[in-house]
Image (cartoon, rainbow, N blue to C red; front, side, top):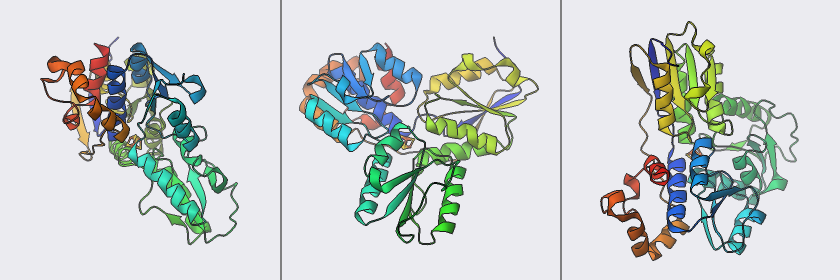
Length: 351
Ligand code: SF4
């Protein structure tokens, strides 16, 4: 069933960030190079469609390294893994590729540096989220998890001059600011990142939703429920007083949401493929087309993980033969990694 609204306003940037691009391309290399099954510790990115696509080509997603047979190839997800998980993978797996986003790695480093200097760390994040679990595991005895909606209620400082504030990269900007203000009021010497640990992709997508919220009657956010940055985009629209819904795909749109609506803002979380956004727009069927609402242009690029580059360099000849001239017009993918996208990678494994 197609709906009729006046116009769609499409957020830019939306969808895949540089970390997700890198992780999807990395896992694509793994399934092209190794015989199935390839194992992946945690969902490679938090999107059901992407995970299903990899499962169809023989990737097995696990939540424990105990579920990986010795000697099997393993990828660690973009959200970052606990040190003991990395160590277990290195001990038992045949090949280990850590697809952690460099911006998550940066927070892991901050944890280590600050705890070495004797700081107690307040970490704003969501309990049980893969990124929060991996980061807290760097120094669990020195970190207190702060759920953004609960604030500092459970925290007592041993030394109020030695408190630091870190955050999950995918929080809502307003959630970060609320806890930051509270923490600075309580600990005037609070140590924290110059801006915040929220990544560029999180903040850009949220700014685009803020912009949409000045004119749209409704905001639809494409992405999975497990995706923290997707859910943050919904909260940003709600903060601006606009009705907003997270949807997995076009089929999830409820007709009553569009009653009396003229302008629909559409965006997508950092792990949602763009074809799902196109299907949503087709389903909404705007009378006067699609208007792009661009708040900034992104050019970030993260290279493939060093373990994968090293491994592929060693196998270059075999790998080039595996991808063949028909896939990439004869260009070597290792040298050309910047110019192919995660969308192309997903197309390759979906053929
Ligand atoms: S959302 Fe940010 S931290 Fe997460 S993978 Fe993307 S760039 Fe990295």
